[in-house]
Image 1 (cartoon, one colour):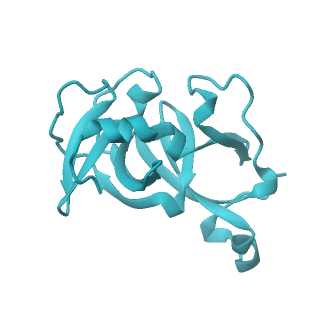
Image 2: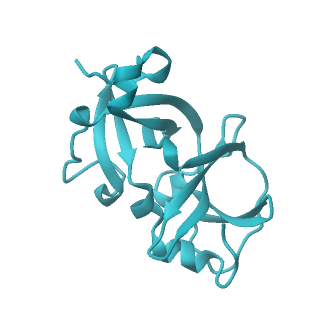
Length: 172
């Protein structure tokens, strides 16, 4: 049985030997990102569209004076798009680019839980991993008989995407 537990039931020694991941839903699958990269979670709001950007770039928002690009993860993964609903949120994350750290928002269907994940429970992704290119997959973890896909947010968003979104702007 996996030693992965929701944080609410985790004891101090387990928390010290594990990493925490914020999980979210996307097309019925549960994904996770390192919680230390999460800056905040916001409800969906209107964005300002930027011309000539990839279709998964919805636009930008002004977040306390910083221009923050907003990406639709459904489109980024090539999944069917759906209308945004009451559970749709933007997870604002910090991404390491080749030059520095940037702030980017990713739109997901819903936030799920925060889990402590022991490194020993994380398995490398196989060559084929559903609709997600495995270069974005950091590891796979079984939690309560379901598979959780841990994402490498730096590879997912990447230097070229962030740099192309708002050329010359002071992106957070």
